[in-house]
Image (cartoon, rainbow, N blue to C red; front, side):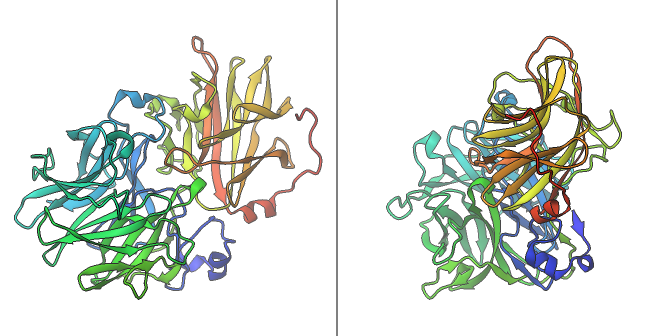
Length: 538
């Protein structure tokens, strides 16, 4: 989703009044952090020529391993996914917190490679000649429970290695890094290798290692201390199996950026260096920051470097210099459903079936077919079509036309994490009614609803959600709020769903005309809110 730079006023970006809820590029050669105010957790980046490619973890969501592209490390757009469905049948049901953890992306021998862990299954690899094209099917290179966060390194002599960490929840250890020899074609590990780092007193948790070689030094970048409160460590050695000496190069310090760590150290064409990392922002997930890097005495020091050599995160900085001047861009969010495929911003809640939806049944509408709901906790259903929260506050609207065949069908908006809320139309007693539920408990109903109906959710700072609807003219804001919660290792998500509470008979469908994100002020400024609550509310 690109916006011509000339059309974006500086005041709009600075005040947040532009239609997009968050824009990092300030239009004056500088940027503000985070560069992505959305849950692209455990980011890794590779540069190929003048292009940067980012990959992030995706856990239980599919398609998995989202890929983003940038020309300047600030303006990012989604270009595809490396995995359609997770390579195990159990992911036909939502396995929250499982699935694909921290990946690593590299370019080698004319191909892009992504190594990724599934902590209950093992370490996998996929590859492609075009990162926005078709990727190979996932190949298991090492089975094992608790093996996480792999990263390859192809050495100058043609030999290959892989570093990985351990998940304490599966392996019982969480403070060791292992380097293993690997087949140069990435197909398998060639031995047990060696534990190269283990200092539990100093770094009680260490994970997410990233491998690189520079000026004869082997470097392993690894976050330590835990997701919410940790710090970034750099290890270096002249020998790939160590011993490694370590240095803390980035920490929260006096800033409000908690746990600044885990990400990619990447160079630019002008020999500059930058570090892309996440910050755990609770309900918003692991949002992405960009830090300048200064090399000093063979160490990459990150952010605003203090006297002790440890950096603190910056909130604003000049952009990396580039040959090209990229258009100001943000990862895609809104979708008018006018294409032949779902927008790349969408993910299902588990392994998905293309028969769950259609973009051809009705021009410029998304049609969802109701899937059986096996339980009442909708946050665990596989057929939720979801997106990440894109900013601290924002608004979303959609238009729904519902055509059920039987009682027990419902469709609408959902906000899901550890808890969930739905604003939906349901068929009950041979009639349709609008219903707001929080964790499955009915809070508001409105009978004899007209279709199509506009559904709205307003998300305020901190994740406080208010829902509204308009069947004719004025928008009705429902007087029940919902505080969204993060999910299992991921931020809250918002999207569409269509279900049925029966199995063995035919069902109807739900058509959505669009789904649009905007800044909260933009949405509320042009909506006329009715002062009276309709009859039938609870």
